[in-house]
Amino acid sequence: MTNLDIAKFGGTSVGNFEAMTSSYKVVVSNPNSRVVVISACSGVTNLLVELASGKCSNEKIDEIISKLRDIHEQIITHLENQHELRNFIEGHLKEIKDQTLVANEKGTSDQIADAIVSHGELMSSFLFVALFKHYGTDAQWFDVRTVMRTDSKFSCAKPNCDEIRVLTRDKLMPLISDKSIIITQGFIGSNTLGETTTLGRGGSDYSAALLGEALDVATISIWTDVPGVFTTDPRVVKNAKPIPELTYIEAAEMANFGAKVLHPSTMVPAVRREIPIFVGSSKEPEKGGTWVRPSTQTAPNFRALALRKNQTLIVLSSPVMVGATGFLANVFSVFAKYNHSIDLVSTSEISIAVTIDGGTSTSGAHGLDPNMLKELEQFCHVKVEQGLPLIAIIGNNMSENNGVITKAFDCIQQFSVRMICYGASRHNLCFLLKDGDTSVALNELHKQLLEA
Image (cartoon, rainbow, N blue to C red; front, side, top):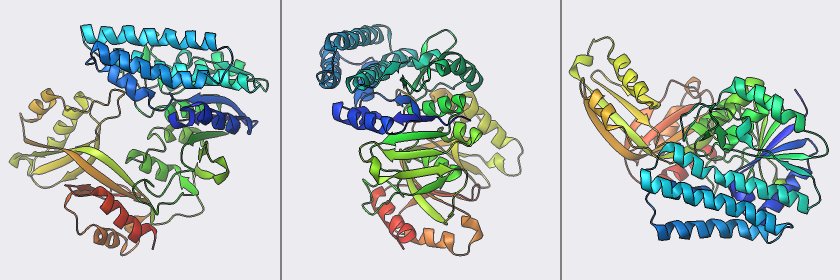
C-alpha cells in the first residue's frame, strides 16, 4: 500500500468558483493527495437528467442549455484562457443538445441518458484543472472512462474490478507524481465497446473507492458540504451531531438505508483493502470529520438514524404457502429475473412482504415492471404499496442487551407502522411507516435514543 490519498469532492464542493477554491485549498494542504475525483457542479446532473427524459420541448431544451452555460461561465470568468475554456464547454453543450434531440425523436433510453449526464463531470473536471493552474499548481485532466471498466447495464453499471485494476496501473498510475495532481471524474465509466456508462446516482464516492483500491492508496477522503457523518439528517433534526468514528458495517448500514453522505457501495472496495475513509467538509475542513475504519473504540447500541423515502412494499399471499416447499424460491427467482433487489423481507404462514428501494439509477426511474407483477400473480395474490418511508436505527448488538428494542418501540407508538424488520442483522432495526410526518418520528427517535 502506498501513502497516497485519493480525494473526492461532491457537487456542492465544486458548485462555483468559491467552492472550487475551498476544495483546491483542501487538496494542496495534503501532500499525499495526488488523485482527485469530482462530481458535476451542483445542480448540473439534475438538469441533464431532465434533458435525458426525452420529454423537453425545444424551448425547454434551450432554457436548460442556457442554465448549464451560466453555471460554468460563473467559474470561467475567474480563470485564464477563457476562450479555450468556453470552447470546451460549448463543445459539450452542443453534444448535449444533439443527444437530447435524438432522445426526443427516437425515444430515450438508459444508454442515451448516460451519454447525456456524463457531460457534467467532464465539464466540471476540466474547469477544476484550469483553477489549479490559476493558483499556480500543476494539474492534469484524466478521462476516467479509459480505466473505469463496467458492464453494459446503462444507468446503474457494475464495475469490473479486475479490469479496473489492470487499466488503472497501466494508464493512471504512471501519471502520478509529486509535481502534478491528477483531476478525474466520478460517476462515469465505459463498457468494453467504449460506450459511456454511469454507476448510478451518487456513484462518485464509489468511483473514488474503486480507484483507491486499484491504486492501493492509504486513505480515501470524501469531501462534501457537512463536517462528517451525522447521527441523522441535520436538516430534519436540529440536534443531530457529527460522529467521530464509524465501523465499515455501521457506515454501510447507514448508507444502505438512506444516509446520503456516503454511497452504499463505497465501503465495498475499502473493506476489501481495509482502507480508512475520511468524510469532511470542503468548506470547513478545520471542523474535522468522521473516520470510517474496520473497528472503533466505541460500539454503542444506538449509533445513528437513517431515512429512506419512497419505498415500495409488495405483499404476496397464497394459501398454498402453508407447509409448501419452494414458494419463496419461486418468488425470489422472479425478482431476480427482472433485476429487482429486495431489501427487507417479512413472512407469515400465508404471505410474504418485501420492500424495494425507489431506485438509484441515473434516470431515477423506479417503476415496477408490469410483466414481473403478472408473473407473480400466476401463483399468488399481489398487493403493491408505494411511496412509504423507511426509518432504520443503526447500532451494535441490539439483540444482546435487555430492553434495547423495547426502548425503540416506545418511541414510535404514536405512528402507524406498516412493517418491522429485525433479527437478520445485529446492526439495524427498521420500521416501514404507513403514513405520518417522518420528521416527527425522526426527532422523537433521536431524542430518546441518541440524546438521552
